[in-house]
Image (cartoon, rainbow, N blue to C red):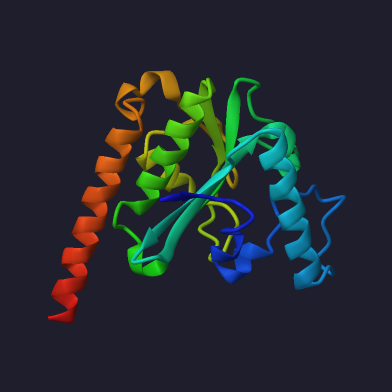
Length: 204
């Protein structure tokens, strides 16, 4: 699992590479902007956020191929989060923007590992919580992860809404997620081993 950087940005799925749903407010974003224009906006946002705040995403790889990714940042870097009807995020929290897993790894536990990687990074940086806006509509191809996914990995609803609830994961209540890089790497290695066994079984 590696960091999201300018060098790895092109490893995101094509539709996500140019998506600026979270990075721009509705006043700045436009559905008429070309793919290349949005891709440049995405690159500019990532560059500025990395320079000013630091790491804001992780990408998981299987056999050197991208399998999923997660992005996160403090709310000042995520203007869209201030436009949700379930309210702005809490001052002590980072915002988890997107968790995306390739279909072949759906329900494999990769989504949880990506959230855990984000939590480990943010906890080391002294951030107390992660908040996310979930999609309760089940819209395919949405820029938001399902609300139920967040609940299954430990988030709790703190601002209910029929379409976009705001959920929170308090990092200080999850000591098992704060045991350091080695512990997380062990879980990643175990997951990769399980995927290798599953791949071998399919090939056989």
